[in-house]
Image (tube, rainbow, N blue to C red; front, side):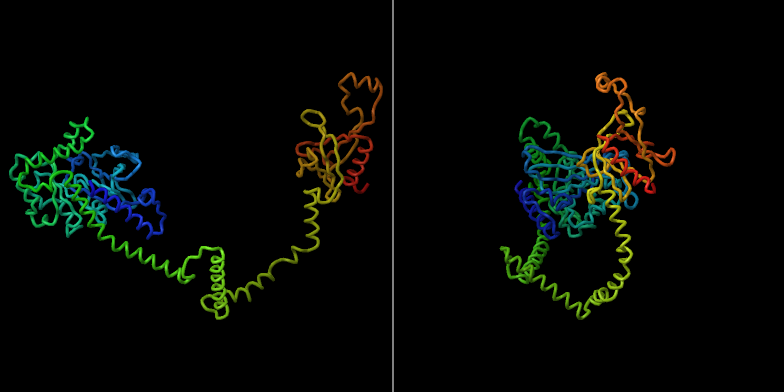
Length: 508
């Protein structure tokens, strides 16, 4: 299996080179980055293969081989893309309308030694199950290697095989085609079929098959491996048993063309041929990229600069070069330089003159803006402020709040705490009346202690006043038709009422 290992290493190098040519990031420690969108080769199986026999499965099967070095050498992981198939796999697949994807079954096979290949099984080709347009989608790419699979019983009619015709159509020279004759054991008693197989293996078949390497297989390799399932080397044992069986049936055939190992070697040789064709193109592309980089480095300073001073020197040189080129365009009008000159000498001054600067900077507008800002940010100009108790409409209790009166804007706002910067409510005093609340409207004290302190007939001066709207049924603050306030002392009450009255009733 050394050929497979060499292919894996070579494929990694080629994919990294291709990624460099495409200016993509290459992860040297993981081969999955450059492998995500494509593989470096496709192996297309054409003809009558086991899972497509008699139309058992008519949808094309795509198996992507991926190498995962973290897996054990004895572990194989099969993954499906879990796409739902809304039709029977017995139905005839079709290419479908333009823009629609074709029917296909996608699988991924991960092992620690697999090369990056994609195996595409076009089943039932000789039974006309697959359309020509679908075959061309897979076979027209020059990175496809064809497996022409023919049962041993049909070897005498190999010249009329549809699979062979399609392979020759896309690979006339036969340098990327491998022929496979399977089910040799089922044709062991058919001397005519065996003679045709022998001729193909010895390159003595029809002219169309002479330039194609042919490999003989039997159809019972899986059952042989199942018998040896208890042995760790069951797969190798099955392949050896297959070789022995083929030698006994095809006595005159070369041993290098018998069995699965011979098929792997033949595929490896074809892949090597394809890679050798690609390598000159890749190398020339890499050299071209390298030359461009070298030329740019020479232009900037002969070599890459590692120090900060060198970096600044290069940056300064680039800036001077840009300035010289820019001035050249401006002075001579080269390129589109005349457009820049026209913009700064004509369009730009005219647009500046069209700006409504006089209207925006009018003294009245400036005053209005300052007053509006003053109303919403009371700390810019020091207004009247202090604590008042506000009666809650929900609990009918008193809550201490910080009030700010702005006489210029005629607004009274309050916050919960003194350090808050945004009002919780604002009252427009020009639309309100202010009046005292008599002692009768104040609720009587609830505790007996208050009664003893004031006496049965003692009445303290009322510290309560309220603000109502001048317009009936209009609210003063949020959903409240009146705001009831209480000062901390009689002096505070008088001062607050006087200042609020001046704003609310300026004529009086």
